[in-house]
Length: 207
Image 1 (cartoon, rainbow, N blue to C red):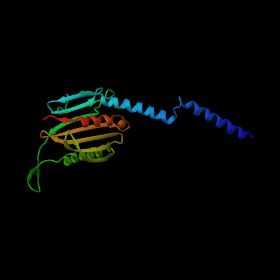
Image 2 (image 1 turned 135 degrees about the vertical axis):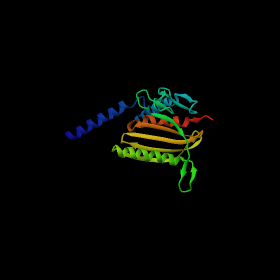
Image 3 (image 1 turned 180 degrees about the horizontal axis):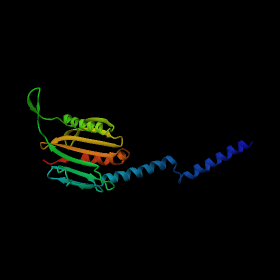
Image 4 (image 1 turned 90 degrees about the horizontal axis):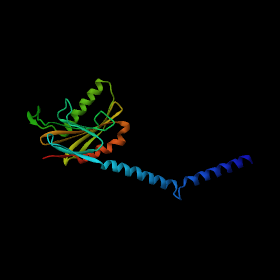
C-alpha cells in the first residue's frame, strides 16, 4: 500500500513540474524552437558584421569580421596579410602570395607550369616531413577542387598535432600563387569556421 502511495506522490510531483515548465501554454518544444531561433539570429547578425579590406600591392579584396584585427605589415612575411581574432595573438586567417614559376620536366625536357594539385601536394609533403621530424601526428582530412574569387582552386584540410584544424586553398591569378589559410584549435572550429568560410566567399582579385 505504501508503495502505491509513493508512486501516486511521484506521479503527482511530476505532473506539477510539467505544468510549471509550460509558459503561457507554450510547451517545451516550442520554447526550444524559440531559443534556437534567437541563437541563430544572433549568429547570423555576427556573420553580417563584416568590414572590407583591400590590398593593392597583392591585388585582392576581402571581407573580414569587424572585431578581428588586420596585420598587413608582418615582420619577415612581406607577402602575407594576417587576420586575428581579438582574443588571440595568433593568426586565424591569412592570405599569402608567391611567384608562379615554371619547372623543368625531365621526362620531356620542357618547361611546365606547376598545377594547383602539385602545389598543394608540395605543401602536404612539407607538413608530413615536419610532423615526422617533430614526432607529431598528421592527418589529412580531405582535398578537393573549389572555386575562389571566380578562379579554380584546390583545398586541403588537415589536423596537425591532434589539436589544430587547418584549411588551405591554393589558386592562381595575376601570374602568382595565392594561398588562403585558416588555422584554429579543433574545439573552436564550430565557432570560427563559418567566419572563415564567409571570408573565402567574399575574396576577389583585382585585375
